[in-house]
Amino acid sequence: MEDVSDPPFREVCKEAGADLMYTEFISAEGLIRHAEKSVEKLDIYDYERPIGIQIFGENIDSMRKAAEIAEQAGPELIDINYGCPVKKVACKGAGAGILLDLPKMQKMTEEIVKQCTLPVTVKTRLGWDEKNIKIIEVAKRLQDAGIKALTIHARTRYQMYKGQADWTWIARVKEDPSIHIPIFGNGDVDSPEKAAEYKKLYHPDGIMIGRAAIGYPWIFSEIKHYLRTGQLLPPPCIAERVRVCKKHLMRSVEWKGLKRGILEMRMHYAAYFKGVPDFKPYRQKLVESTDLNELLDILDEVSQVITV
Image 1 (cartoon, rainbow, N blue to C red):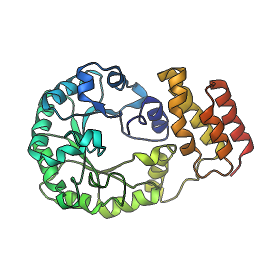
Image 2: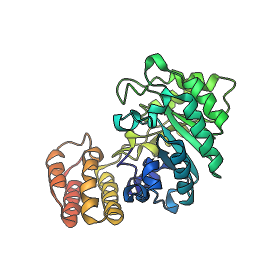
Image 3: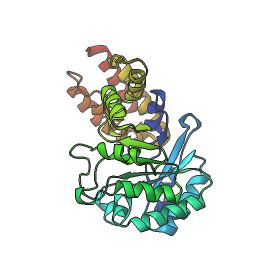
Image 4: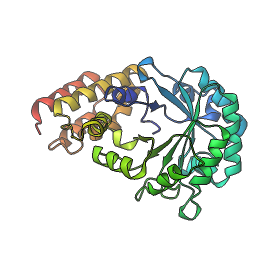
């Protein structure tokens, strides 16, 4: 969720019911070299808690040092990213790339666990490709290394974000009697009904939501309500979508500065109003404007003109 799960985004997700959140993943090499972009990602706020700081990298010593720096920022846990599939990360041996070297994965994890006083968790994938799905061995190795929980994105690195996530592997991990740490499932959960179905079929200890929350943070409260009552909440009205979008925009400007805050918010407008009829002309205005007051006026007009 790089360039997405920053503090402004996390604030609207927390308001909408997210129980646990993570920072964007942070480069270990960037942290130990005090790169501005990496250090900035350590920003966390009390209203976000509990929160984990997620780090990635291919060098064991750098990851150990980065974990020490991340811990000083005061999160509730340190999370290791062994799941990022993008070429510039995985093909250097970081992220999902470490799935090609399980002994190194275990050694790196052991070193980070020894370094940290906080709980250490991991997010990973099923394997490098469908011929190399080793998630049960991975789970055992990581458990032996001392992690406190494991999140499994039920795709291989080769799949990237395409095809269907295969949660049957999550069920197999859960059913293995030697694995006792909590197992969280991730991948394709984009509705309350699917969350309930996957919980019933595959028995994860929890569900992680990523892309489905972009522009739709209400998914957290909708899922929790459905699991509790069996009933669906009504979707957010236009006024509610505008309210949250405006809040996201204002927090983006506050945290990033006026110019950058406005520019980086552009990726979110289409998601906030996905499926809303007659929104396209307003989206065009929103992505072209660089004036904060004008943007707020456009959003106000959306709430006054569009009805669904």
